[in-house]
Length: 100
Image (tube, rainbow, N blue to C red; front, side, top):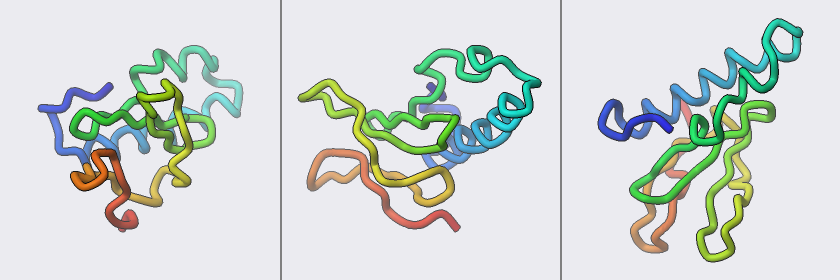
């Protein structure tokens, strides 16, 4: 997971999405091993004020962690489609605007 203090949330999200966009084509071309590209699950997680999101690099889909059911559920968004922020009303991560 990207260190929360190092970059803004928008920058951290953009960095993960750019990393997935750069690595996965190398896997598809046989130039990079899948296990190396994926690394640890933690490497693809994004913390939004205590709420976890997960980017799946192969599909570039975002999932959110449902702590009650301990499951990862689809957000309905792919990389480049949305910017996430904390929803203080519903106490979860939510999309706030399309990616420019």
